[in-house]
Length: 43
Image (cartoon, rainbow, N blue to C red; front, side, top):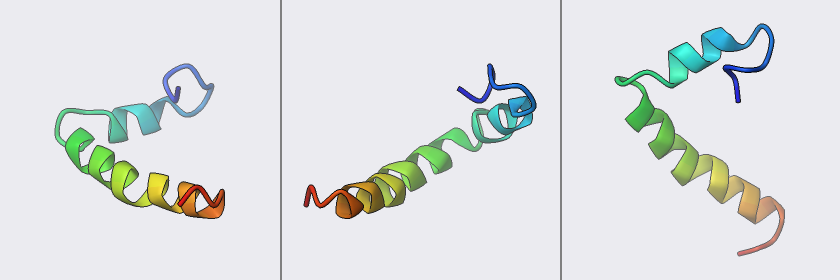
């Protein structure tokens, strides 16, 4: 999504490269999805 958003391509290259992708996926799965589901009261 960041690659096609004007001015946000640098975020795609920063968070989507081979070195940081496992870390960003772990963070997203553990914290962002958890917080979103808690906020929406799915859990």
